[in-house]
Each structure stands twice: as C-alpha cells, then as structure tokens.
Image (tube, helix red, strand yellow):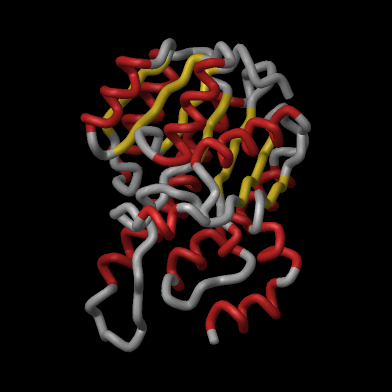
Amino acid sequence: MEVSGHTALITGGGTGIGLALAEQLSRLDNTVLICGRREEPLEQVTQRLANVHYRVCDVSQPDERRKLADWATSEFEQLDLLVNNAGIQRVVSFLSGERDLEDADQEIFTNLVAPIHLSTLLIPHLQDQPEPAIVNITSGLAFTPLAGVPVYCATKAALHSLSLTLRHQLRSTPIKVFEIAPPMVASELHGRRRDPEQESHLMSAGEAASGIIQALQEDRYEVALGSAERLREQREALFSALNG
C-alpha cells in the first residue's frame, strides 16, 4: 500500500514506537492523529511536526475510546489508518494474591480491550475509504512469553490471534489488517526508562517505526522485526532459555 496521503490515528503516539511512527508518517506527507494519557508530550509533538494533531485519551476507558473515535471521524473525515499501538507492561506474580490484579487489569484493558473496541468503532468508517488499514502492534513475546510479565505476553498473544481473525472477517472489504511484532524496544513501556547500558542492546523506536512502514509498503501482513523473528520461529527452545 502507499505510505503517503493517509490520515492515521496512532494510539500511544506521544512516546516510543508511536512517536517515532508519527514522525516518519508526518515526513511522508500524511496527516497524523496521536493520543495518549499525558498532554505535555503530545503537545510537544504537535509543536514540532507538521500535520500532527492530538487528543488526550486513556484508551483503557470505554467513554474515552468512544469520544476518541467520534473526534477522529468527525474532525478528520479522511481517516483511513488505525494503529493500535498503546501498551503497558507490568511485572505480575500469581503468587502474590490480589496485589498485582489492578496492574493486570490495566494491561488487559489497554493492550487488548482497547484495540478490539477501537477497531469495532472505526471499521464502519474505514471501509468507506479507498485504501484503509488497521495495524496491530504486538510483540515477539506474543510467541515466546517471558514469565515475569505473563499478562502482557498473554494480551499480545491474544492480539496476534485477533489480527488473524480480523483479517479473515474483513477479507471482503478494502481494509487491510497488519500485525507488526517488534522485539524489545528502547521505550517507556514499563512506565520507566531502562538504564543506558540495557537500552544499547535494544531496537530503537525509530528502527521499529521504519520496519512498520516497510511492512505497509510491501503489503506484508504479519511481520516480526529483528530478534522477534527468532521468538516466533524457535518459541519452545527459547521459552526454556528465557525462563530457566
């Protein structure tokens, strides 16, 4: 598909992969809508990038998701690209009783429920556009989970499954469904930045965004980026290695 001339909505667009993707799509002559929970980083993005607009939105909240969809379709009638990128990752132990349940719920609502709901809300609009697409950002951990972050991995595995079935259900519409699975990326996914030495071994957000755009250009509907390809192809052996 063409990667210019679109109007794209990117959830979690103020930082990390979402921000890098907004930057690259803006340079490719697209209109970009970004959302996130914090206004300051969103506002900073719109001040330095052309054709970028923002809305403060916590996609884990049903009312805010619906308002986001209403805003995007009413203010930007040519909206034709949804990027379900917003995500959080928390350490969850099933040995700690109810202590981690709130974190687990937030992961489920943000990482899985939000893409389901936003896709459902926007499909009627998207299918009337000439070249629409839905892009789900999953993870190499969808294929080989890391036991310390079990709910995150489960939500990404579920989003992988959703991408397959969504692609099948939409096969008679013009909507293309892409799934991009990055490896670990230097970002604020954990709610905090990693130390510089650790981040030096990770894929940059810019590299991940470039991989997403290349997949769109080449109509490659399921792509694992970088080391995530090994997690997909060698899942059983790598699960044992990752989790001792």
